[in-house]
Image (cartoon, rainbow, N blue to C red; front, side, top):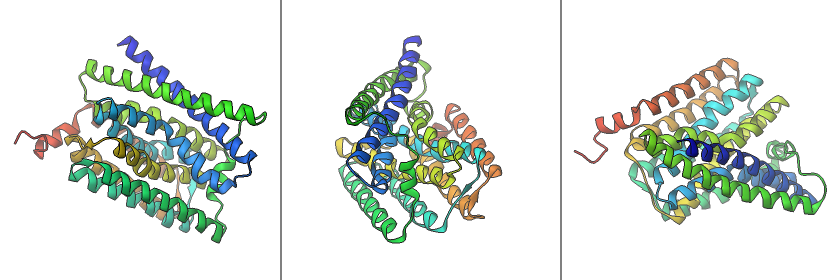
Length: 330
């Protein structure tokens, strides 16, 4: 257990530090060659902060731990809404524009519903992957042209909130390489340690993925969102979360599904899918009410996250799967 804990802790550190260096190095390189802040915010920042989820989910799926891979994605999205936005709104209330909620919020909700339908049908294969990745590309293209037309600056400010690696092109390139290696090695250590820990604790891989691993891979989003909230760029904090959830469901899960088939565990179908749908819808309701996410709502979100974690370790998902006869024993 001690070695597994060291692997998990070291994996977390490498994922967080590696993702930070990769994003900051990539932003510096993109700026140096004249890429617009809008494109940097839409692609480099969004993809970079979701890279830990992608590496961990790919490693887990091809390594024979599909429950951990799917749990990581679902748990990360739940953590993004309940934990990360909860923390950000406690720091500084988050205001929302109608255009951002309609465009980005609707896109996230549509992706969540698409994910839920596929999960309840039975799993995720190449068809889901192809459709998901295509929708992600289309969404990015639409956001780019819409922002250019309307003058929306949300994604531009997401890029501007990232502190690039100083010192020239070679240092930026080195940071990208070091960051990528850190993320890959960190993902390997985290998956190895988490799978072994799940077996020793006699809990499912899905539970470890939904809680421990999901929290670890969400730390980059937590860091960028907290910084945005401290700087009182609260709408950027909201954009980070909406964009990250969209990337996780369409990009991370889409790419993973193109590589290997991911079946839906009974506990995910009976409990976790519905939790994700409910918290996603709750976020939109909170944001629409007064066009802001204040500290009272933040407390509600954080309490719900605590309930979600407790429910995972108390076996609520398996109990519901058994009640609904989704375990295949009927």
